[in-house]
Image (tube, rainbow, N blue to C red; front, side, top):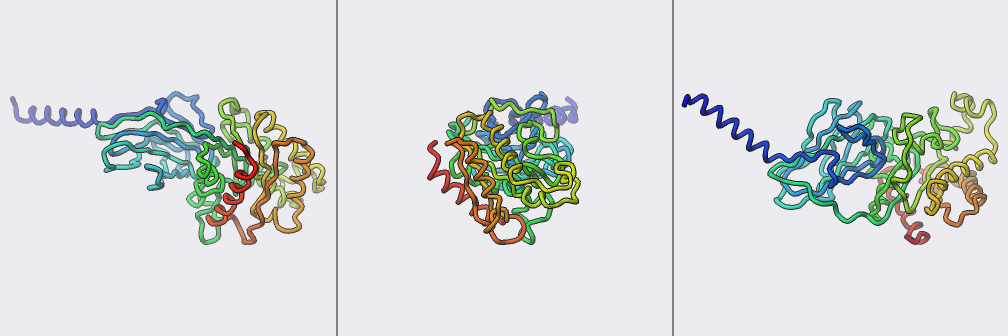
Length: 360
């Protein structure tokens, strides 16, 4: 046999053996656990939008990769291996594999991708995992028994929480929902959670032409006709942390959003109260038995003498629903968005309230 042909045959054999060792786990595999509002309508991949969206899998092997593509290349994900954040990845606009872990000890492991960034940073598509060393996907862990859903603004999103200089820079690297009070609270209770949030959003007015009552029931956030199927997820507790942006914008008569909604006159308190009530009623219609916590804080909407906690209290009182509560986190009394420490303080306050109020 020609020695060159022999070498080629050997190389092909080696490549074939290498491929056998790589186990591809498609995004449709039943062993993969998803959290969040995820679009599975396209067969080739799962579309990820919302803050806190998570993809998790138990596996046996020594390394794992994820096949991803992003529409803008402006999203960041925490890579969590065996319940520890090990790195951050930023998927490119080119479909490719990302090494999530390598040289792991032989045996069982857990991999999780956690979306840090907000939906306006673009859409990520997840196609599946690849496990080396002859690994395989393992059955899911026992399902989490508790479920929470959050509706909020930049505080809930964890906007600029990693910006230690001024906590207001818009670069997406500084936003980290994993460090938000919402994610911290969910981890404390070992609860599955969804986060429907957007920096700058309000109930009556936002810093852009979209309010939470218009956004809250969407699957695809930037598509007005897209609808989430509420039967797919039934939270035990819903937390609404809104009105902070309203508190600023209802006095900004020159903004286009103000003119479009209010004309040339700031809204009366009764209008604000009624608007809040209507939004909570929408949630109640989807979740007849769920505990709802109408929360506010910790930015200046809850500073001393602010009228906004009182407006929330009046709205809740008007609803006459014994499963709807109020909870106000005191003003942090520092400028700009909450620091990591201040996010933990919000979480501590909310956790304490839930532990002393909710039976679940």
